[in-house]
Amino acid sequence: MPTHLLSDDLSSQHLAHSHFTNHKSHSKPPKMPLSRPGWALATISIITILTQIATLIDPTTFINDFGVESVEGVRLIAFLLILVNCYDLMGALQDNWAVYKFGIVARVAAASLFWSFGPAWRLLVGVEVGTLGVLGGAMVLA
Image (cartoon, rainbow, N blue to C red):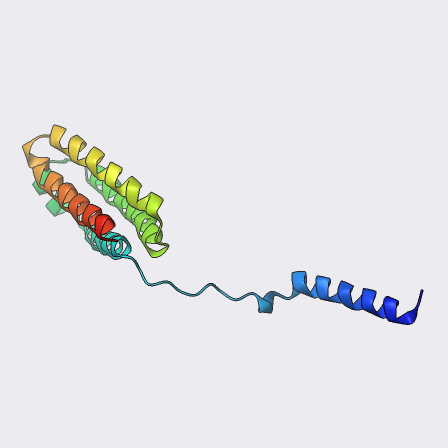
């Protein structure tokens, strides 16, 4: 085999190998600014996470406002709300429209469920409808 063909073949193998092994050549995608629904859901999520951390630490207000008698039950609700809102926050930071759409459906379901719990829970119905309006409006304006 002629030498120039051998050297071309080796350099192409080197390039192919370096393409797959050189991790420094891969850069992160540029950061995109948050869309309106991203800002809306991120804000809702952060506020909810902070309020639920407070409820996790001291569940007294939730117990008094909603008539839930179990401290463990209130802390479980707060913990699960923190988890769900962390998911929402990640979706918002990724501008994930599937998460926004799920957020709309989840808020309708939550408002319906809270309504069935009786008058003490109507405040949360208002919160769910309000956040539904904010998120839905942001999606329409995006």
